[in-house]
Length: 262
Image (cartoon, rainbow, N blue to C red; front, side, top):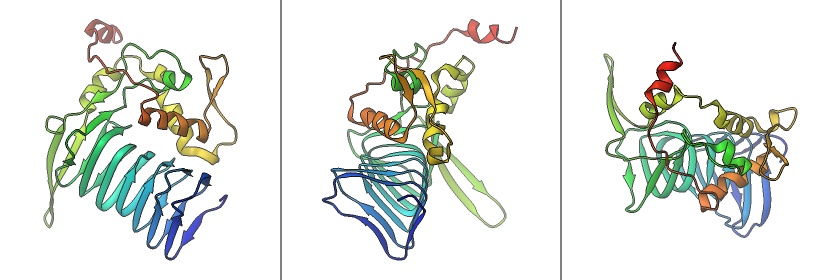
């Protein structure tokens, strides 16, 4: 679908669908957007707006805005924003903001912080990782990861910060799940070489770009082109474990930091 799509009832992908289905512009529905097709490569190149969104095996280059969101084995480069609840199962999202959040299996966050009002519900055995300091550029090219890079395993208890916001009429509590302190310390080092921002921006801009960009030569000597198809395959390889991210060691030399201010 090359243009924007809006439906008054439901956008539904048949559960038996196979092959690739792509929506190159924004998708909206006054009711629901649903796909539970495990054999279908479903791509949304822009945002999704609906009352409820339920997706399986989908790639979303933009963000999702809904009342209720259920994602299983999905990648969302932008954010997942829900007015009621979000249910994440083995998925990678940029960030999320919702009153209620439930996570299961392995969850990856691309940005340093996510938000909820109620305490996050975690299915036993669930792992939550932050990729804001992972060397995604090198991984995309099949190159060795930088020394001062890697995934950060988040602890829901220690990495949760509760804030109380109020004015004359409303009082509200917000919980944030953040690694921003670790990111601020590491950002004083040279993190531009990770090229993460090029990778994520190319995905989010999608069809708006006038040409296809690349990250240079990959491990095979070919251009690592930043197409939606390549970026989708890359993140789904992370989800499936085909691409393994190293754990960040958390150590850095203070002399390297102070030396930059001399």
